[in-house]
Figure (cartoon, chains in turn purple, red):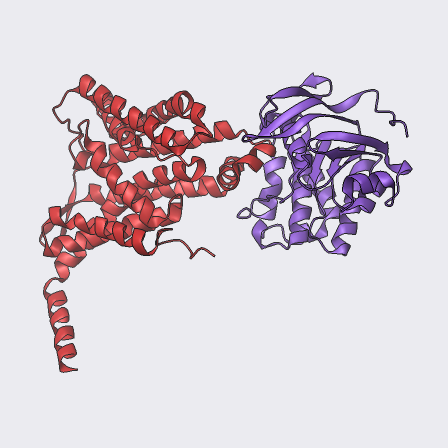
Length: 245
Length: 304
């Protein structure tokens, strides 16, 4: 199987990135790219460096070698808050919503930016609450009082408030009920329709193959394989090789 | 049963004959408690958001009092001295944070403790060099008194309590409403995620340090007329502020305020039976008991 074509103009490009987590060398030269509006999956077993890759792109971990490009510009070493303003949003694995802030205040951490008019804010909120009526109902409730699924919705909704060009989505369906999982899939589709690129780290292979255009497979801190999602099935030998237990 | 009755009778009798002093000490305790709360809220705010134990807090309090003395001597206005001193020391605090604490983010807490301790030594000796060892006096803006039983009680003391309350209330409103309040609270809860949401965390830290420094300065000016102003005046107060911050639960604003009033009231009541110098021991006893039996703080919900 030949490697699928990568987008001519990458929105995010990771080039030969090495990252350490404390003293342990986690990423050993990761390279991948995500095109504008493209949904890309990142698959692999636990501990192969998928989350570390996302954190490195977000500027939360500094790579010791290699670089990350955003819209052709090197962003390695820029602080996360600048990247967030440039259009990279991050939804971490453990959600990390601000538990003592209300739902509305959680959203406002992303919404209260320079250059966003009140009218635009309201527009964004209206659109968001149309997708997530549950969050609208609970807007003045503390984030910590929401259920796991609602917290995941809030984490994604909060990221959407940044009007990002790409969302780094780390295991959004982990520990959720099937009904919530299908809702997450719908949101990914909505974001894709709106032209937002997504780099999706998931354990749920069927969902990843359905939601993504391309997938990368990671093993021991490097990308080992790269394929069009449409050319893969859940039972593929490749899938078994990198994910099978 | 009759022994119990005797006891109750004794306590009632004592209370009835000492009612005046109890009320006086309650007022004193609340006044001291409010000023302590003002100092402690800056300290606990800084700790809560950046895990920095600010050993220079007492020197910012002292610096505030001195800036107040200078502005008062030039302008003749106490209120201008209060406002300018708060702003000047807030700016100094911001500059100190940027130059000495920002480069230490992410290092072992011992580094920031040493850094703030260093700042405190520098500021103390600067004050000694600049203003000399002779204590300065800051005149209170109002000199009126009212009669509290047999005492002529200065109105200014009550005004201090009210102003401290107002400043703390202002801080609460600032934190509770508006974008910057949300930024500060989000950063307190999860620094990394706040940054990933585009909140400029290094500047939030600088801003909070400046607010804490400004509050210390305001309390220095407000309290200046009641105590002598010298280069070492910060020591006593910051020690007490540390005690109430620990008793109230590190980083917990409401807890620190409650603990300030609680400890000050206890000290004031103790001063009825023992000498005021001995009454200070009460706050240490409360500190030790808190650390032994409830190390997370008296005024915080039991951790789950």
